[in-house]
Amino acid sequence: MNLEEAIRLRDPARLPSRRDEDWRWTDLRGLLRAIPEPSRPLEPGDIGPGPFDGLPGDGVSIANGSGPEEIRVAGGEVRTVILRHVSRGDGAHASRLRIEVGPAARLTLLESHEGGGSGLSLLGIDMRLGTGAACERLVLSDLDAEAVAVVELEAELEPGARLGQTVLTSGARRQRFETRVRHPGQGAEVRLDGAYVLRERRHADLTSSVRHEGPDGRTDQLARGMVDDQARAVFQGRITVLEGADGADARMAHNALILSDRAEVDARPELEIFADDVACAHGATVGALDEEVLFYMRQRGLPEREARTLLVTSFLGGVIDRVEAPAAADRLRSWLLAQIGAAS
Amino acid sequence: MLNLRDLHARVGDREILRGLSLEVPAGEVHAIMGPNGAGKSTLSYVLTGRPGYDVTAGSAELDGVDLLGLEADERAARGLFLSFQYPLEIPGVPALTFIRSALNAQRKARGEPEVSAPEFLKRARSFAAELKMDFDMLKRPLNVGFSGGEKKRMEILQMALLSPRFMILDETDSGLDIDALRIVSEGVNALRAPERSMLVITHYQRLLDYIRPDRVHVLAAGRIVASGGPELALELERDGYDKYARAA
Ligand SMILES: Nc1ncnc2c1ncn2[C@@H]1O[C@H](COP(=O)(O)OP(=O)(O)OP(=O)(O)O)[C@@H](O)[C@H]1O
Ligand SMILES: [Mg+2]
Image (cartoon, each protein chain N blue to C red):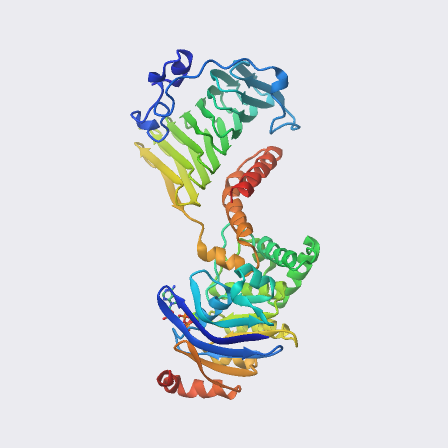
């Protein structure tokens, strides 16, 4: 199984399928009989405005698979990069991007996934964070209903580095965000958050795996979402604390709201601890909005739709509250609000 | 003002209200007393339109308007307020945000302009002070982690801010300490007005010492089985419900 090869060689047999343990809830082989033709290049005029327009930062676009292959932030530098991954049409494309953040540098990465058409896309990011470097990666995915898209991040941290990630998505025909982090401990910190708002027949999969390889590392994960209609959410979170990674602090929470009988949430939170003196906690809840609370709110005068929206907004807002970059957080919050308003 | 005629209501397949009739004229405060399980809270839910409480016969009118045909929020917009026996917690929504949204939703439904944030804050501060509530509590998610008595105070604060015309107080006294009972009762009394009415559900005379009712009714087995002046409450306190349980 290798999605990148499947796209490059146009070989559907290489697509990940339900037989691959980690992909059983996001089966691509069962979905796609053939790999679409390679996507045609896009003209700059085809790209249109992006969700982070107007915020200060260096713009970088990957359009139908073509764009830069590397972003470097030199040691000590502070930078914001606005990365737009734009897909149009019904073709397939795969791209790979290296991001190097030098020692003590800070990168704010505002990343958007746009369009999608009815095509198949893969973006793979390899990230290295130097000693004491920090990266906050804020991802907003607003794709067409027929798109099939996978975004992977492979991150390697040096001691004292910080990675903060928040992924917001409205899903797609099938969509997956996969994040794998090598965590050295020794003061390094990881936040891996996400929020999804899924309706109609949309699907989103948040899969992550963090490996604590050295002592005294922190990982904190909060994923929340709501599914309506016949939508389906997948959350697979794994935190492994290897032998010798003593004193690690690992927290994971996934909370989902199901607003329709035909919507579905599949969750698999896993903490594997092989070290000593580890603080860990995980919590997972899947439920409907509390009908008694809704009645209470309506008794006070809120129409049902407003009451629902208020509850869902405050529930998902908990994810945005943890974002560090304030201007970007405002954009994320308004986007979320619009999604919820449309969904409830 | 409130006019209930021969109300029958069921929860699931159990009939709880069985021919309840009651009239509360404008400006009056009526008390409802009755044994546990008699249907007092059920009556308050039926009037406010809680899903799952089905009226099978009879009528309920507020100022001549059929309540039963309205959604819960429409009833609220017409001035109906219930102070819950067990107030709920609303995670993540600060009390102030919640009450202001509710107030403005009501005003919108009535075709009135919104209350501005500063004006609302001013009112909230003054009512909170009257009810001896710490204003910071209003910035916390509504009722989350509040004590039983704090939740009851918060109900009365909401009532004051929403300024309803017909108020149902379901055991507002339970959970209140001695001082709080007095403070909350004063808050309630301040809302008494010629165009407003109240239905006060309670088990204890104590509350009625503060909130003097015009009439007292006994609700047993889903019906009003006796009505009288304030002296009826004293009689109940002395003799209990035995006689009415048998009558029902
Ligand atoms: N959801 C429900 N399902 C089944 N029975 C119910 C339900 N809600 C209330 N009941 C029953 O209806 C009856 C009346 O309940 P209600 O809460 O109205 O009593 P009450 O008079 O308010 O009592 P209390 O003084 O204890 O508050 C009780 O026997 C109760 O068990
Ligand atoms: Mg009761």
